[in-house]
Length: 390
Image 1 (cartoon, rainbow, N blue to C red):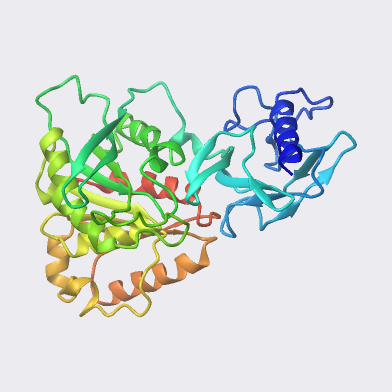
Image 2 (image 1 turned 120 degrees about the horizontal axis):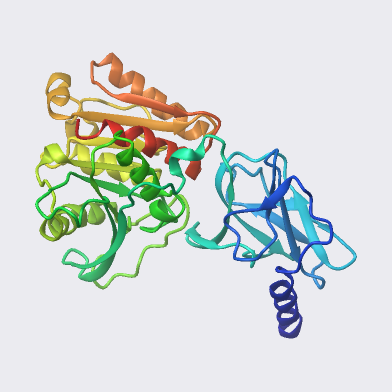
């Protein structure tokens, strides 16, 4: 078994850079491929062809990352050619970024031709499908900000943590300028790298600021998990998140915000502090901001697992109990979801309607044609940020 697995890995690893004998003229390698890899290939009509050479395998399947994705429901059987190459071409995919991996005789294996991204609680392959409307997250000839990695010691967890911090292009040019801050959270099974890597948040922010559509701001992206001192880390599998969300909340309030305000030139009052997040991070955002309205007044929830049957008198420590007081205190409450993610869209719409009927101001956004995936959240960020700090 060990010898067979070794030969299989070698054959996969050594074959991905070989030119295909008959490449179609209407396709090109995905932008997410490792340098020189010809597959996955994306066709002009957005079909995606995957290939892997595994001559010793009996069965190979393509496994998209979950049911809410733009590649289709998996696992998808792949066909074997005489040379031991397995391939499959999906129907037209939803534009944007999608996780995937292969099942080789039932064993999950990343595609050696793809870059890997932290998602689903592990490093996973990913494919970028071009979007004709995706200019807003493209790298352009505009002033670019920096994404910095800031390590800090959190007393709450008694451990060192990395935070990714976006600073706008003019941050180092004007030492007198101070900036509002957006705390931006990832989803379950992902980490602090997600928004800048899969989400392309820095390019979205660069383009919005350069176009005069958003105020220059600092964006803080921290890992959404916190572990009590001496405890085993919680698993970061999809849909589970931190085992101790209240500890993460305490860490944000007691450690992260003070560190950011002490380290960067921030405007440190609540009028200049926002928080938003996707999926698990959106749920964390609502919990943290609505129970700490002394610190936040700009709130964004992207595809969050919202509470069913929201009781406005008791939910979030009674934050919604007095509509007039809430509207005076909160400058923006923003809810978003993709039209293709019914399990997130329906409760978000229900929450929006409940708030509207109670006279609580909020903004609702639907990303057309996308599900529980990064293209939804890229669009969320693009629509949300211009409303901040106005």
